[in-house]
Image (cartoon, rainbow, N blue to C red; front, side, top):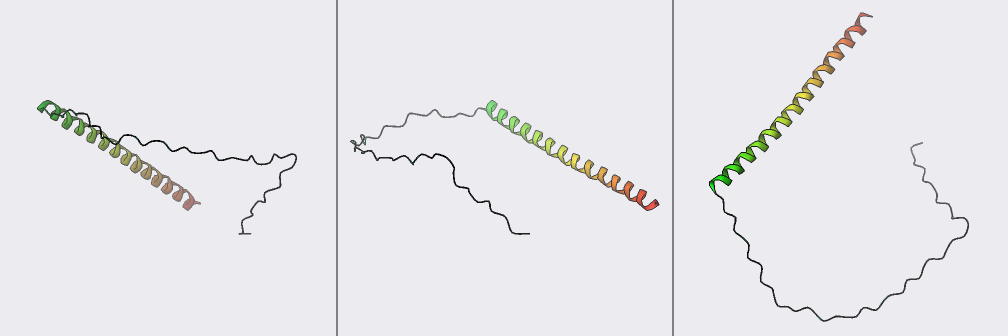
Length: 99
């Protein structure tokens, strides 16, 4: 009863094709690429002005507030669901007790 029944793979019926023969190909070595290192391109330096710092701080604050509001609303939804389930359980219990 508790042992799993493993299905058996039936043998294929009808015409079957033999497996294809794969022949290896020859690999020709190639000359190594030049080892001279190419200089990295000059990167521009990021300069933080007071305006960009203020924008970054404002954007981070907005993200934190939005994520916090979403989490609080999810917690409120769970609390309301739990309260409604508790009210339903008490109602069902009182109906059963009166019978």
